[in-house]
Image 1 (cartoon, rainbow, N blue to C red):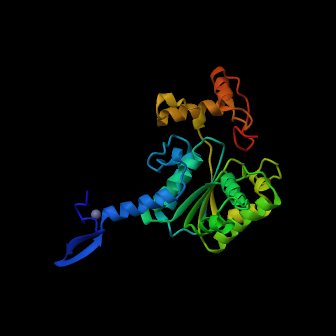
Image 2 (cartoon, rainbow, N blue to C red):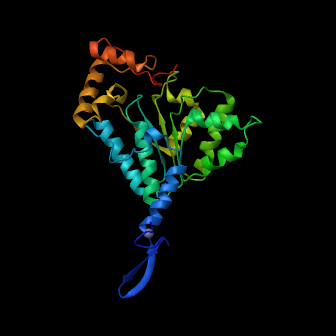
Image 3 (cartoon, rainbow, N blue to C red):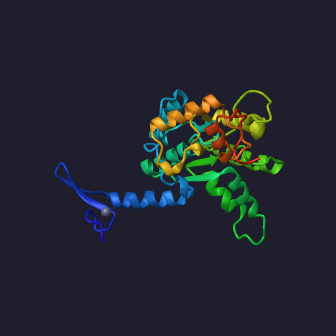
Length: 282
Ligand SMILES: [Zn+2]
């Protein structure tokens, strides 16, 4: 059915101070942002994530991070730096990163792109295989040129000279061209040479560049992986209870499956701390 406002022309006639003119119709804007959202490669499980649906509960670090994420989304594209969400697994970092990306697309028609860091490296690597018909530059160009890029789970990748060079290239070009990037990472941003620190995981050169180009938003919170989804979406009170319980029992390590941890949370035997890193992988 044709749009009742514009008859599918994309232009809607209006009258302002006695002068008739045309403006872009809402249906045109909606089609455009819908296309941009579709092109952004947001994984299906995060497709509905937005800033309004992010549940905030009494937790000072989380409140501050959500406030700064909202401010960034509102200011975009007039931003000097990107964002770096850092904290333990399962606390909503990817949700926030996607929410900001979606807000930038919806609010100003930004050409945005989401990639899990390991996926991106795998896709680039696959272009070296002669049966794959894309070239390295066909994959890299949109990553480097997108107006807002999300690189999820930085530091989870196995390091190698090639990985370091590839990531440094992407990050440095985006930095030089002043294109903001949003990162998420489970690796603690501490100043030590701890093998589980972000600095060691991504390399010293990349680490200092990341600090130049991003506002670091470090927070802790309830680990959603312990929320039983059969109870529906958790409320603010549910998340506060979960967060308090997890704090009392200690943070989870990256080595155990959530199932085991759920059992330990129930019987109170969980007694482990977050050393940085991703749960469920080794
Ligand atoms: Zn219309």
